[in-house]
Length: 464
Image (tube, rainbow, N blue to C red; front, top):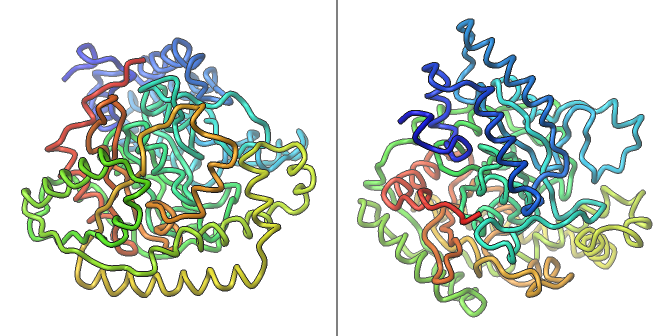
């Protein structure tokens, strides 16, 4: 493959880094092409809230000069990426922090952002999120501009899917990486809680927040995760365990792998899950079995309480972290933010402690199940992307009050990935979710990569 026979903005990170390393592609040429793509379509998508095109091009020139001198840092060198606004960037703190101009100048890069920069990545700018204090235009889904992208990494889902960046850093408290990834037809991965530093990530729910990559293919998630994973003394929740070579996951082999399917939990969610999604996910699980995996039904009884427990912890921690501005936010903040604060006010310490007991029980059940299986497989969404008029202001709150597929794995802190597994009759993306045991991201990524390489859904492009 050469740079000429494929639109540059739709190159994967994996493809681009090989071209850059060989000298067949210039970081400046690549960055310029993606900035042009942003100029051409982001007026329709509204993915970026802060486009840093001039500094990105300067960073690309620096990267190109380094590479020409033989100082190639690795797969992220010269790769244009963007980050969810929840992550601090030097002199551009997360808007949710509400800092004044003077305080903003003192802010440095979040650790995950800094690690990407150290790997030579080029920062294009910051992406919209549904929890911002202001209410900018909501990002549009590249597969159908009348539809939402999912939240709260709203801009990241749109930007990666439509080729406005080669990868993005998202954040996941109750599904906010995996939900937009599933609705936009891309890969979204949250590693085990404590694997990626949250220093410089404005907290939504401090014991649930995960920072992670959103990319077009599994290989790209591997490259980004390798760059950002690792212990960080600046983050008190960071866990000092060895970081594996994630590239070892890039082999098409699930022979002997045992995949657990929580059929009773899927049945509990069946009433609100589209039959199309259930069918496509079952077909994907069947394909993994045909590749040599063994499928085993498993039961995790506490899953049925996990979404509500996650919500209670989430909103209490959000309110506790934002009490000073809560009165103002309730009056003038964005709808999603007001909902979170109200829920935090309306629940209290007894609810929080009960939710933590549910969390402990779920972790025990997961530990027992993972003695028998290597990964879990289940849907990653209840529906395809709805139209804007089909979503009202309280949908975010309602979503967290009934069992669903994302939040339980924030509560348990497990590695989880969203991987495209087909399209609905309306040509909207559908995703499979794979979940792994603590700090065993390699197995999750290997299962996802094996499925991806056979199914090849990533070859489809949105119509924009």
